[in-house]
Image (tube, rainbow, N blue to C red; front, side, top):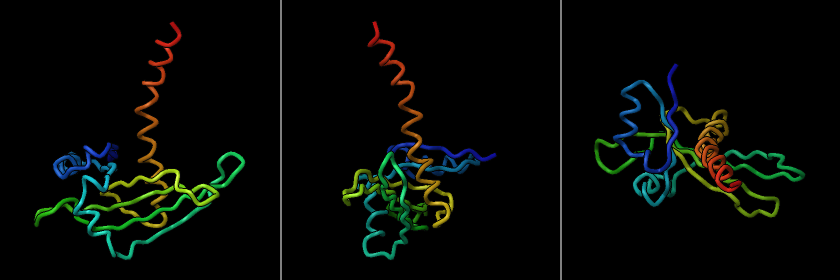
Length: 142
């Protein structure tokens, strides 16, 4: 088994990504435009594939919009690691974007895998937040 490491934007640096690969793992890390300027400059003007799907959310349907691009440099320089980038946007029935985030990974990103990869990356927040919620409840009950 090869573990997939999930992490926030601080994790998506070349040294961390290389370290994960050296131990036989894979990574799926958040990558913000403000801290990955070289990567996002590659996206400007590029033909970026897109895939949309309607998801039932309660009594309404929202649109999950995915974009991805493979083989983009994680940073500036000749030794820059090439990664695969993906983005998810959630759009409400009125067309308003209610969520947007993007990630980098060493896993293959295709129309068939992008939704699952985005769901995995988003699940990290739920994993990190559960213990905090239990702690808050325990202290607020006293």
